Image (cartoon, rainbow, N blue to C red):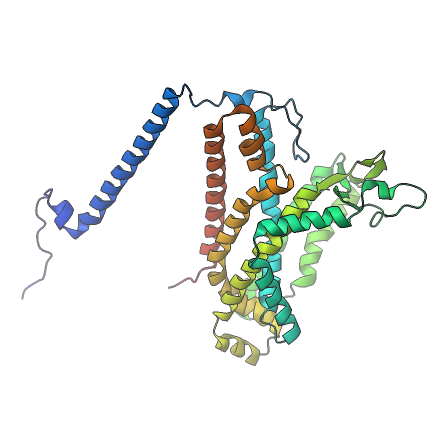
Length: 404
């Protein structure tokens, strides 16, 4: 009786780095890494030599000097006497704000348009097709300018709200739509308001936990729990109870017309609205196609089997089709979120002070530190893009098909 054993391993030789398939791939990767490091080292050395020859040097001391310019919309305290670093921070926050708003709105528009494009209603389907083909085939910069121009031309100025018989009136006596932007009530935080906010956050977590439990119960036992009204109750009832128990600590400050403009409340500037809506409707058209492709990738047999079990069309879409379609939708959706973040740099066309307009525009021109500003811009966009990719990839891994 004989036994089969692995052949004895010989001593390691340098020739095995090329001839042995176990080591060959590592060898080529190491060579490529060395070549890449050498190329970057050469470019860096060349840059430093040319700067030295021109009497220049890389320095970021300009970030501590006074900016000397105003910014029309800020999320943090800022004046013209603030530093360039503070101005850059304002630009970063403005970029993140419009990117977040556009990602959320574009996702909602895209999902609705993608589902309705597959509707059996001919009119609805054609309207969604018209939306997709029109908006995704015209550059987003043109949509930004169109929306901004319409806001300036159509909406009234603050003066229209003056007088005994004003030409314009506030919506619900609390929201003013003007050609300078939209003025909305601002929250006033009193003692105990953080308790209400914390309760609301816990309620949101409770909604996700309940829906997750209901879905797991459905898959495990087939018992279907209601989703709609329990989610609404969990979201609002605890928060409202705490709000009244704490003595209504959160109030509202309404915008009021004083002089030639509104004071109080929160101003959502026209450039922000134009950029937000343009990025949303433009990218939403691409997301709609991703959703349509993901739904059509699911076999019709899945839908027919669910219908044979007596499920309604809405539950078939929510419980059968979309969970499987997400595996097809999520990867291209990541690219669309990245495009929104990078396309927000077009904000300078309508005067919105994002990071490109502040650090890469005014600060660069005033200080002459082009290399430093461009390097910081590259670092910011690279960081935020990698962060979005990492977060979405985690979600993508959670919805992908689990094989045994």
